View 1 (cartoon, rainbow over the protein chains, first blue to last red):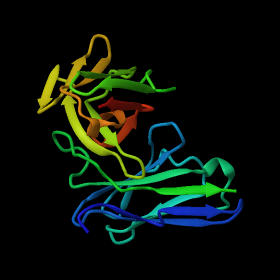
View 2 (cartoon, chains in turn orange, brown; view 1 turned 180 degrees about the vertical axis):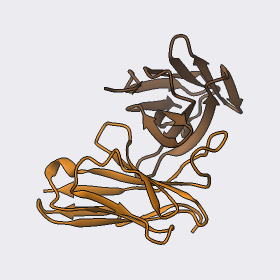
View 3 (tube, each protein chain N blue to C red; view 1 turned 30 degrees about the vertical axis):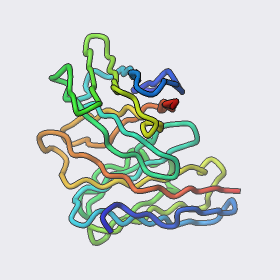
View 4 (tube, each protein chain N blue to C red; view 1 turned 180 degrees about the horizontal axis):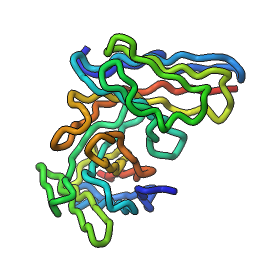
Length: 118
Length: 113
């Protein structure tokens, strides 16, 4: 496809369950970002990959959150032992450029995965 | 500590008139400022950006103004159209090796026909 895709689009989990959210970035995009968007708020940064390297994970809220991008394309965000406060929309974005470059590298967002933890 | 703030959660404007969306920031180290537009059930879509070394950037009906001394930026949409109705997010980028975006909480724009 032409854009960033995410699956599933909706996920309902029982508290304590593990979930895995998938992101397919635009082909050839080097940079990949995960954001968490709570209801009524703007997206908040979780983590950033350049190819397969996770260069920044400072936004991950706890050690229950884990992200990977093993082959430098598809990425998975995993949340272990989900809690109600994890309920949010999880957005993935990709960008063609790398960090440190001149100018601004536009980030292209997927539609998000809405996670509801009961 | 919110570094990017959008104090107006909603704005209604008549079709054909100007829409002005405002954004304030606290961190003077931001290098780029951006506006994203979001329709329901879709991801944010990039609209327009401005470098911290400029004070204005224009793209068609959209103009972004940056006032660094006031740490304030605004998005002007002229003329407003019903299809512009969406949530608008202001975002900032530190540049360099830290390319994650810091977002405001968004403003819901409704353009009335």
